[in-house]
Amino acid sequence: MIYTIVMWALPILCSGIAVAENSEVRNMQGLELRLDGRPVAMETAVRLVDGKVCVPFDAFCRVVGAKAEEVSEGQLTVCKGDLCVPIQAEEVVVREGVTFVPLDGFGEALGLSWALAGDVLSVRSSMGDQIGLSIGQFPPEVPLPDLYTGERVSAAAYRGKKAIFYMWASW
Image (cartoon, rainbow, N blue to C red; front, side, top):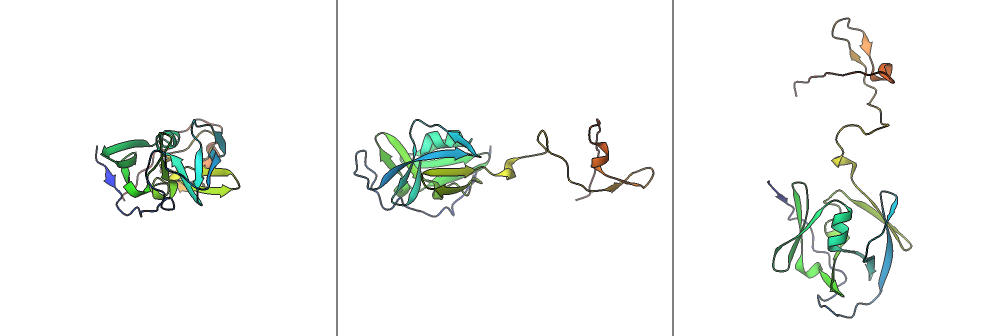
């Protein structure tokens, strides 16, 4: 498997918090997590640390369908498909045995968007990963000429009927 390493991930510190097992962390507030509009229960809550959203590394990666890896001593990486994003060592915060990393450091690269409203973190996964149509979705309205008659045909004419569309393009 070929991995694309995203090296442009800027080091965004969790407000300069030292990496220490029992370090004193100021303003550490627990947040409720919602993924694609649905509440998600995790053993360790997402935290707001001095204004930065920090997520429990392993648990959050599982929730969003990514793989959390330690590639070398202290070097963490988040992978999803062929894309891997390294986490800067100075971004990592260990608190009570749980590794926290700032969402800013890898979320956008994985196609996640998020918003913080009060104590609720709403995360949306990218629709770019979706291939094809899901149940209940309709194909785009693009009328095309029938191969034999030349008449314009639209997918809407076949709604509710079984149909196979065979298309070819030179690009």
